Length: 466
Ligand code: ARG
Image (cartoon, rainbow, N blue to C red):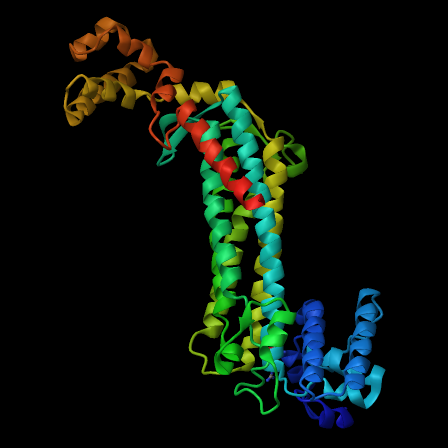
């Protein structure tokens, strides 16, 4: 311990409090960055050789050592040691064991401050890419489901205030989530594009007197460019906040979809049955099928938002540049991805396996006076000011409610009693198909409008795949 204290920064003195040392340690979670850390070191060493800070043979030895470390980690025989603070120190210490003194030259012109910021950006680029793929897959599923239900003409009551409002096509409902997720995906992509800059070479905070080539390392690591300010490079975590914000918004979308599945699969609604593979039975009530997976997806929105708030609070008010507080950036970030990715993937698997109940949905869509707007529109089209038409139909609904009847029970004579403008064709309006077919406005729920929407959604996906 004493000996290595001299060699490695970030170590406690041998007599340090054990609890303090454990508290300080980040290996338990930053071990996950090992691939990025190796990539970082390889780019750095090659650059040091190019600019003449390291001899070619020295660089070659170090690179061999790094290869060996990679094999050790992959095969599960790397000696992870908590007496070294983090993944960076563990790899560097092992390198010196494997290749000798020359291994201690790896850290020339680099600090763990630029190292960790670089590793984290690299990791985040990969994680965002994976999540974007998963969201795109979910969007494909939504489009496929929309298409299937457009063909079948499946109808769903549309709600406002969770009161039956107007009938819609189930395809229209699926596509609503498609567009929400299209924007969610766009936010993930934007965050990824903006964080695509390399902090490496910023060193501790002020840059370095070694003739480093930051453009070389940036490009070697696949970044678009090096960050132009060394202080910003090591101090900033806005890139992580931006990614977490995008994840929190995504998870909010997923939670709404999950919530609708929970409601619609309840006995009260009875619109849909969840596939057994995504629900559990109750241990005590034999009749129950619990929507555990959608419920967890709904709850994860709270957790991911919590991750965002955690990091936000850590970063707020921190003086430049690096502070140990920033070690706390990783767990919320990792956690948010660990919740969001399976949430997206599970929904993509669950949606095609849902068993919808079109008769129940159609019955619900037409009861509860969901077609009242159509009657009011009818009068408005005959010249009655809409507010007036609204009042007339309000009286119709009041009467029916009192008598426990539905709109479709109305006769033409009865209707005429409310307004002489009602004629034979008003009755056909009270058919569900009629009401849906009438809403042909762009973005509306009529089949022809939904077909057009579906084409746009498909076109969008095709563009992304091109
Ligand atoms: N474990 C640290 C972290 O995750 C690495 C950077 C340490 N830098 C320092 N100056 N102590 O942030």
